[in-house]
Length: 114
View 1 (cartoon, rainbow, N blue to C red):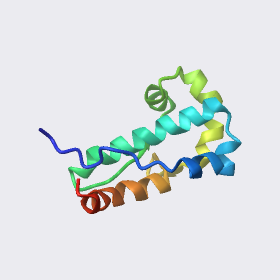
View 2: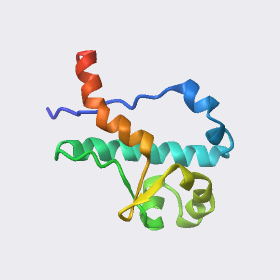
View 3: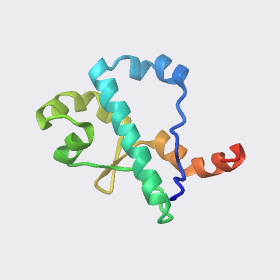
View 4: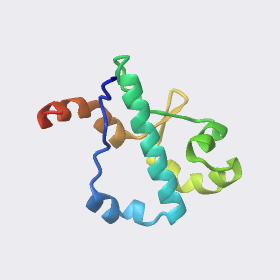
């Protein structure tokens, strides 16, 4: 059995529901944003085993569309709402808050006794 260093995503519903920037997103954009955050989290969990918590997303719209489960055209119509939540670094998109959670999670799990 393989140990998953990050079995859960810490979510704070009040923070999500009361964030003004998130509230301005359409429901479709919120869904895209959440789905991409989950992929960031999983990417961070996979790279953790290699001692690098990357948690980044590809910048190519075709690859993002695959992760989003959307046709490229649909992604491109929603992406302008979601893009401001990410930073382009070294050709990949990074979400600062999620990256901090990925880096901190193994310590949090030890505290919880997992």
